[in-house]
Image (cartoon, rainbow, N blue to C red):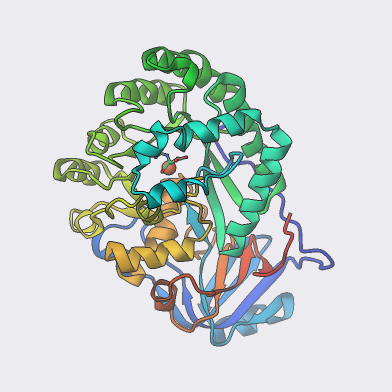
Length: 437
Ligand code: NIG
Ligand code: FE
């Protein structure tokens, strides 16, 4: 089923029988994010459409009704498992629109190099960075990669992520990129979290193509893309545009060909320098442009004109010790903003709540803007805005029950335990439940 995420299995936690219908009642705030069917911009990002003392009724994994508790109880009480969430806030499940989920090894040793003051590029030149992870990933079996990625998905789910985008990019050869795409497909079949697959063959030039980047781009375009488009569940194609990685012209070539083959374009743009990435993202009608730390005013204006979503990744700024993106400027210019973890071996966080609080404390977003960016806008950034990202009738019943009585605490608290339980496709899992697949 190419081009769309596969329907995935959701199994009840061990020893429980999942009921077909669920009624959540007495949410202090039921944050629905009901609104226009597009990524929210400007003032729209502040409208969470909160229902006080709210209730949500889900059946067969789908939201069937939302409203005040006193209205929904008489309608559905008899037919559903009723969960009283008095004192808690209910928000849509988080959508993490940018992760590099599948790789082998880890790079904790780079922290010592960072402590010496080395930059991302210096670490890469010393044999660290993407190249290090590529060598570990090439040596790993598909089963090993599947098992480690499954564990990471469990951790993301425990933090309230119910939909995640996952990129390849640590294989960088035809068989190794296909191995990573296969892992994405196995996770789609096996794990409760909804996974959207992205092909990032142009993540770095592999060592056997050193000084021959053009030839590697030819391999990506002529061999990888047709196979990926024809034989895998990948829905997006991404390119890392940066000095020492890929140029604007190379990225344009890859993304134009990807579009012709039915993959939607995305871009790692303007992360460490202004490379014209935002402008290119608008030119190729990318669904999202990500990072954007050094995006120019012209680039930002073009993203706004095109409606391209700016996926900002503040945890990545933190881990690479680079500036934070000018988020307020993006919002003022009318660019819809999404937020993601950028989970990868250089930025190891599975936590969207942490990203939301970084967005409030370092990007200058309001708690409402940050929550909009981490849910409905992130959903549009992965092409799933009509299915997830808000608690509206007809959408998947994916929600997070927060142990706080006001949604602002999500942004306010830094790294604490705010998630109480997760609802995925209408079924409830407690945060601490160890195994969910
Ligand atoms: O999004 N910038 C490029 N790719 C990743 C980092 C990958 C890595 O360092 O392994 C990112 O930050
Ligand atoms: Fe990334």
